[in-house]
Amino acid sequence: MTATQQKSELSRLVRERRSIRSFAKRALSPELVTELLQAAEASALPAGREPSHRFILASSSEGKAKAASMIMDTYSEQGLYKWMPNKLNQLMADRIAQIPAFLIVIVKEQEESRRNYATVSAVLQSLSLLAWEQGIGTVWNTEPFMHKPSFTSGIGLQADERIVTILYLGYCEKAPKTKPRTSAVSKLTYL
Image 1 (cartoon, rainbow, N blue to C red):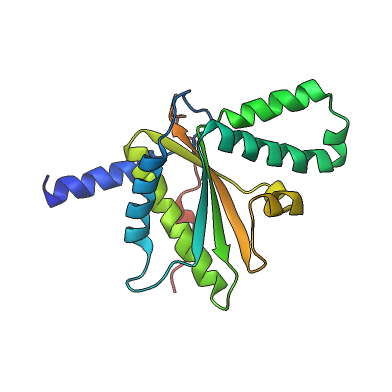
Image 2: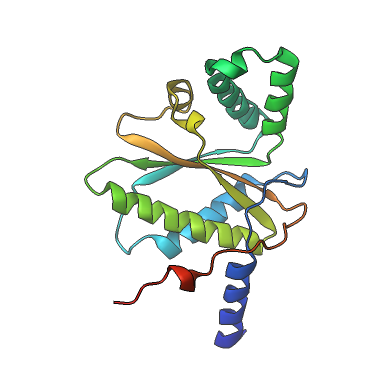
């Protein structure tokens, strides 16, 4: 593949990638996720710099059930969810557990917290593009439940860490159509 073809392929990936919320019922191998993570880190981490982040992957039935249970526990702590019938709670937990993989992304809180957050965000963007190239979709989840003590203690979050996101991953069942977006040019100011 020529340099021009590589540039064109990368441009296509960037423009076509979408957040995916509906995944095919197909297992996602932890080995593939690991391989994609290693490539993403290699592309985004500054040379010689140790990562200030870590990941927790739930892709086995047991791991996903545990993650779904922790998520549902945080929901039950909230007023509205306390009163939901158990059957409805179980349906929600089952739906959550059907997501092929959860990648919990954790960053250390240090003097360079903003830099660490920016670095892990770049890793995740690279991961999303590499995954898309393999027919795997992703979506970031930043809901408040992930900061609740019942969830953070369940995943073993340390005092000097915080969750950036829970990235849901899975093979695409169907990619959504492109929606109109505000042009970057309309947000650009020249000095």
